[in-house]
Length: 95
Length: 123
Image (cartoon, helix red, strand yellow):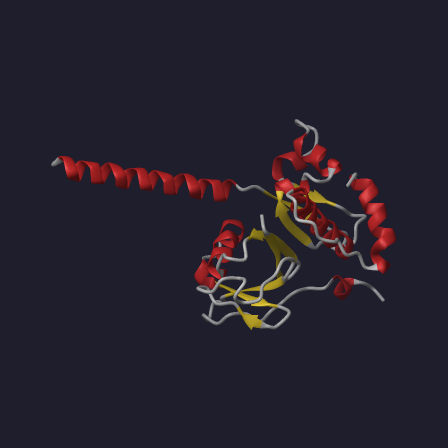
């Protein structure tokens, strides 16, 4: 394992082992094994730059580094992708 | 069937079989789910979770813990940021054991809680 990334959606974080030479599509295929959502219904957004990752480009080319946080969004019923939604634990604390 | 065609077919079959084994290994790649105090879920590789002796014994003890069957471990005493830091530590530890020497950064405000969790997890 050369590195890992943290893929987040709502209250779940997936730690995905990957290599900088792998493409975003490779990552989506790994996610498919976990969430059973086809790769075409997945969109990955690098949180540090808010850029949408392109399937064909490698992670290194898209500045995705070790320990990076990537948001996962899924295609909704109306064929559009949902907005980035990452829950924070503070959302639930009683202050 | 000519000899050439037969050979081709055999080769195609071998390729198909090889493909099949690689897909099974990816689906076989086991993960476990760790759940924090606030109900946040962290899905990590089984080998990473095994860095913790406590989680290892939960996952491997025969018949004892229900965790060993479904691979879900709930930590009602560990907050989400701490549990995330612990998961990061597991992966750092794997990378480190494979010869990659990097620092593991810990925010000062997390230190005490993290030490208590690490003590509990035998990490």
